[in-house]
Image 1 (cartoon, helix red, strand yellow):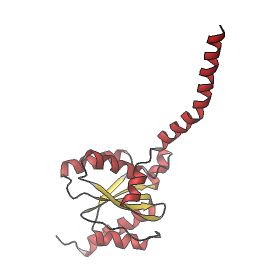
Image 2 (cartoon, one colour):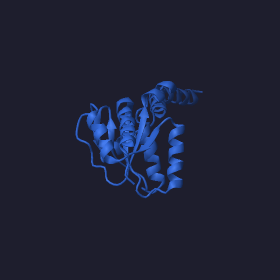
Image 3 (cartoon, one colour):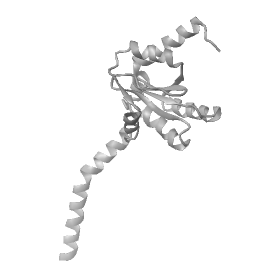
Length: 172
């Protein structure tokens, strides 16, 4: 079904706003995704404060080309979904985890046996291809990274205390 000019203009404006206001954008192909599973994906992403929208590739490419994004737009096969992190939502939550959209959709890519797939994206003002976005999607969350860092700092101290305790046990 063809879209009217007014509807296309409305969608294009929404896409321009997404491109302008988002910290990161992930392009996904949802070709084999049934409606029921699509609704579940949208619900989980919405709960995390992540946006998910669907638009025609021509309108998406036009909005992306108007943005100040470095590089070349990656290939976007199949039906195109856009997963994005609105800067406003992240500011409200007190975090700036711009990796969350990629990580969130990557979880569904694994769960749903590739019915939904990352095909590229925009991160830190640059276009990234599928492989680069998959690498970003596999980075642990901010809280996990902080926990790993604390554990790394704590580990030598903990091992030193265990060694001192072992020496004390031997001497007594």
